[in-house]
Amino acid sequence: MIQIQNLVKTYSSRQGNVIAIDDVSLCIPKDAIYGIIGLSGAGKSTLVRCLNLLEKPTSGQIIIAGQDLTKLSGKALRQARQKIGMIFQHFYLLQSRTVTENIAFPLEIAGLSKQEISMRVDELLHLVGLEDKAHAYPSQLSGGQKQRVGIARALATKPQVLLCDEATSALDPQTTLSILNLLRDINQKLGLTIIIITHEMKVVKEICTDVAVLHEAQIVENGPVESVFIHPQSEIARQFISSVFSHELPTDLLKEIATHQNSEVVRIQFLGSRASDPIITDLLRTCNVRANILYGNIDHIRSTLFGTLTLELQGNSEQLRQAHDYLASRELNVEVIQRAL
Amino acid sequence: MPFEPSLLFQASFWSDIAQLITPAVGETLYMVVVSTILAYLLGLPLGIILVVTSPGHISPNPWVERILGTLINILRSAPFIILLVAFIPFTRSLVGTSIGTTAAIVPLVISAAPFVARVVESSLKEVPYGVIEAALSMGASPLQIIQKVLLPEAKASLILGVTITTISIIGYTAMAGAVGGGGLGDLAIQYGYNRFRTDIMILTVIVLIVIVQGLQSLGTTLARKLSH
Image 1 (tube, rainbow over the protein chains, first blue to last red):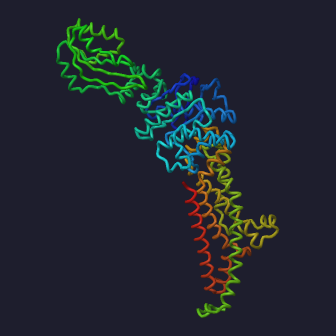
Image 2: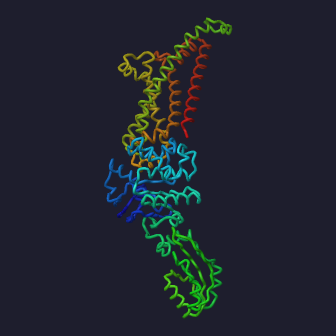
Image 3: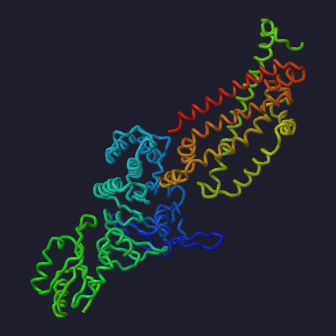
């Protein structure tokens, strides 16, 4: 659906060239909610702004629905942009227009008739649940309501793609969730591909189907959200994950356990239906080890259950090996944190 | 005839004064209104061009911006009284005469238009660039952005700019007397200063204060109503 090929963006400054995007290639499947996460300064805003050519790439291609946007200019580019919606961290609504008039704006740009505009605006007001604010001005709205207007406005011309540039970063956690839910609904109802730029892993965890981690202008890893969460390849991804799932044990506790004989501390992670299996009982019965639960948590990644269990297993080396074999046979992700034999 | 307080109670005194002041008010308003309109016809597009051609804006063009900016600065550095004289040949070729109220409008416009361009520029620069980018992301053309984003979003600030410009032009019209333009400023100099008629001087100043105050409150009220 969206292909980014060898995208490079450099800025020239007095100190020399600054590379904002360094040879990024990504393939974003249709209907995906694709998260691009990175620290500030990683280049993620530049990347998303290259997608609709608000920023002109230095080299590389942006192919959306078979069309290479980097080859377009003038009117053809403007028409292509009408098929790419965008929402912003600071909303950027027109202060001099009411909610209705703001949503009508892209339709006026596209040259629709008054009647068509008014019908479409009504649909959109309903979609984002702002019927009662139709005639309010942006200054009279809360942050969440403003972003709803932003979303309605971005969807007005029925785009195939929605770009979200830190769309929830200015909102409180509660409002963030409601906006994310709205984006998920839209993704399902309208079959819209959504690209979300964020520095918050919880946004990725809530709604993204896929994620790419951008670090120092490059994609360091990408893939379906569940696999990135369970098998992060890069240090930066691990840091992001620990910001939403912190499973670290107190160091004092680990030190104390280290004095035990024949024990190891393992972290077991499981996804989906595995979360409801009686793993521990089976483990203790089949392998004859003793287990001490140090930490347990169950959460979700999108709508998939995601559990973490940290155990101290005690037994001789043969028993521990059996325990590992058993866990492997249940397709659980096991990581040994500490071993004291 | 020197001024004496007892004159204030004579009807003939007031009718004399009215005869002097009424046409002067008319001339001032005529010069101010026409000059402001013409100055905006010239200055508004120039202000828009200054903004949209500036670096990083919707149609950056360093040459246009630099040349226009310099031209505006040159015109703005010349004192009005100099412009008034320097443009006499131009005025004559344009309106057929270099003397009188209408003739005074030409230098007024030449002097006010660059001022308007700068006032408009600063108003339009208040529109956050993010809003313009949002419009670009929707596929708006530069012309649509000017019409539908820049000007409407800066409306309140532009109105305040009109107020500032109009009041400045009132000040300049006082010098229009130099080319026989008439108006309140001329009256104050001719009667109040040259003929020691302090009463007329004071009255003219009062009338000017009333006009300026009225314009300012009108502008402020309008701007407040237009900003949401």
